[in-house]
Image (tube, rainbow, N blue to C red):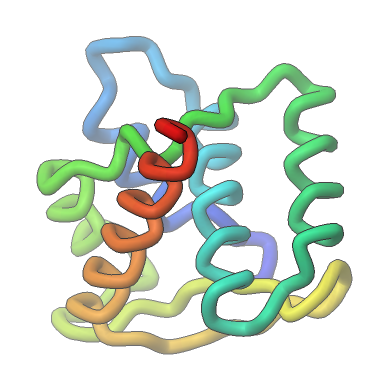
Length: 127
């Protein structure tokens, strides 16, 4: 299960963006970046640990612009993930590098939190 880090949101982005050529690996990388922000916010993942993962993804020339992709259409696709029930979602977060956590959250809470994190990310990029 922990190997699914970033996959839930990544799959939603991938299925929504079939027309613009976003590949599976690129979508999962975007999902990983979003889950790093989620991990920092909810589990206290350190900025330095998150930065190391971002640097590794950057070194592989994977996209970094996850926040603009969080749209109502993408979020509706969360329900299509195999790890999602009608109301619950298992997400993989990081407490620290090498310390993953499988967390069950309500789909509604996940959508609210990831939307807020995307807005926060976009606002910080605008300044």
